[in-house]
Length: 230
Image (tube, rainbow, N blue to C red; front, side):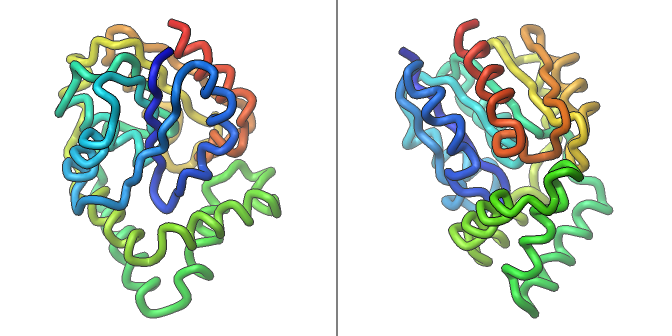
């Protein structure tokens, strides 16, 4: 039995992993980490490590992948396996940073939920952008994180370092999984991760955008169960 720590993404509560928790639980106790403690990716990673088991399998989605890569730098000896879902090892571009900071200012001056909900929907596969159930999940997660949490997470993302130079030092079995139509961290970002980590493999979820755990839960569950069994 292997303890498993799951790390959510930006504006995501534990519900982003709701389909995975019952599938993974027979393999070991599952914890969904909080990403609301800390002002930087390094501080968030340190807070997660302080609460985590002594050794564990680690999976992060989107921003959770940025945090997971930082955990690998801070405490590689504690991580038994690594899964990076819909994420990237690259830092923000200047354009991405400007867009993120502009979004904070627009949200500050208006209805945060009304602004965030369509943005969350837009990162899904085109066939799911009007999915009512997915929209309801997104709204619950937006409310759970709140505007202050969104600002803190966004500023941490903007300030993250380039993780590409540290990828080659990762020696644990690593899964990189991405939606084939991910508009935010497209498949080439995961391909880059797999090319740099010695013991890594790539899984691409079909008809899937950025929220693979919710859009293609059965595909993700199968991939994670195979990952745990490596």
